[in-house]
Length: 462
Ligand code: PLP
Image (tube, rainbow, N blue to C red; front, side):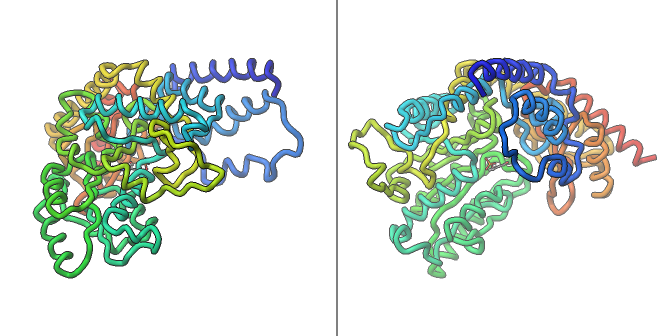
């Protein structure tokens, strides 16, 4: 691609993006393809000769787009909906142009320092301690795995050299994200040593049960290593009682990790700061700007107040990466598994500057308002019931019929192409789950999806 061709195609690509962001509804939100359809439409072998740039853009539209599920669509209400906003997209574009790698301070000072600055701003915006260390990973799953590795280092400094001991235990609630178990699997603690703590009626970890489980394990000669609390659980967005959990961890010298992947962003709005109460006592925490802070995937923030422990767990410097020791020149490769590091902070910086704290808070506030208004309508409906409290912008509810009937409602709503809603199981029963997080989702979209859901339920009742 010559510079001139790049300019031309680049302008076309930006035009395409601008049109897309203005009207993603022109596509059905869920891809309407069968498994393997895209694979079959693409050549079995890569091209021997380079192809002209026009072909790439044309095939993007013709072949790729039909197989895309549109997370940037206002009707996307599944999982945790999010937005890849225009400023974030520009940041991502420029980051790829620079193609920097922030493994060392020297290998790209801007990557390292902008990461520190944006994460300091985010700590201020969410009321977290000023002196925490932060870094950006791709996902919360990877961040939580690093938290568990640091916890292991704190509990058993031999682990780094000798491998994981079989008596270390991690505690997390029955409602925690699977990434906690996967992290324990990855670092050799093993799934059986992740002890699941029961939850209360609002799906929050029960501190009394946690205390009992830890004390029982201690009496049995096991070594409690970490507790992972959740602020905004995946199914219901429940908030574990972090202050009480922190107290238990402090008294027994156990690492406290907080998974605030979804709800951490809510604290950008002052009235939702309560969600992070007690987190100042945590040893580590993850939160995902790529979930609820307008930043394109991937951007997950990892904080720890004990970077020295994380560094002890991971620092390993081969000769070719050794640089002069200057305490202000942080080498982020010392704080995790990966050597290479993308310039993710650039898109976060663009987003934070473009919207400001108030802009982001206003979006979060409005989405919570819309969903809570829907929750009230669900409560008032004679044939629907909410299946969990609704602290943020995600509501779990069901038609008072069978699981199959609720699944039918979900499928029919999703077949319209206007919306993508997901489901989950609570107390063993299927429940509908609607999560608002895309910046383009407005009251009108939520009114419309609720209308469709009621209409489908009415058909079942006939
Ligand atoms: N933690 C919670 C509470 C989640 O809901 C999710 C995903 O939805 C994750 C962690 C995993 O996030 P990631 O995809 O960034 O690994």
